[in-house]
Image 1 (cartoon, rainbow, N blue to C red):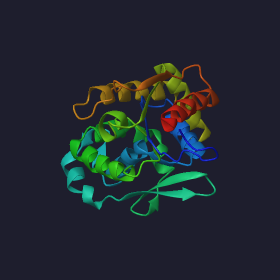
Image 2: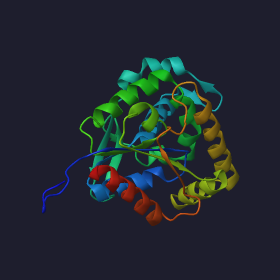
Image 3: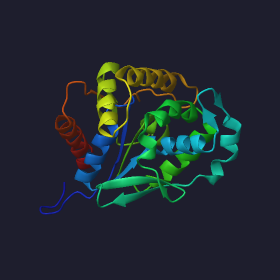
Image 4: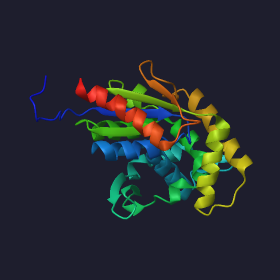
Length: 237
């Protein structure tokens, strides 16, 4: 039992996994802010590698030179730098801010094939594990609770219907000025679900000890309150 007047300074690892466009990053950012934890968007790291592959013509509509990408992985340095204006850490590739560049539908179309490469996953998982070695971290992605931090104290698995997720993603892309159809976004969401769930290396699966949250009909505030209560319980143990 803690002495009166003292706070519990215990830090934990919070792993948030789930399907694309379930709002994992939004919730993870808010959760990290509330807990004064470090937030790491692992999906952005895979998007950064995909952006690198696109920029270097290693991948395109009808080709994927995975061997060339693998050969050039050592040329990739991904960092996160906090932006006072944005209020969160933006993604940098080799010291270039690519936060907006990686959020396009084009990058979304190719990120799953890139993420299936074992060499890419090994490189990024190693970096992610180093980021969380001192705990006090919220990390979201596809395999955080199963591969990156299998011993995380709190594991969340986010889900929602494909149509709900496509609507959210479509609205987000329109607000960013992208000209596209809802049907294209829905196709991208369902294709990514299939690839992410069936890849041989670290497929998207719910960890046995993860708590599943279907947020199809939940507000961001309701989701945040639920996870904060779960985190408070783990921290107080």
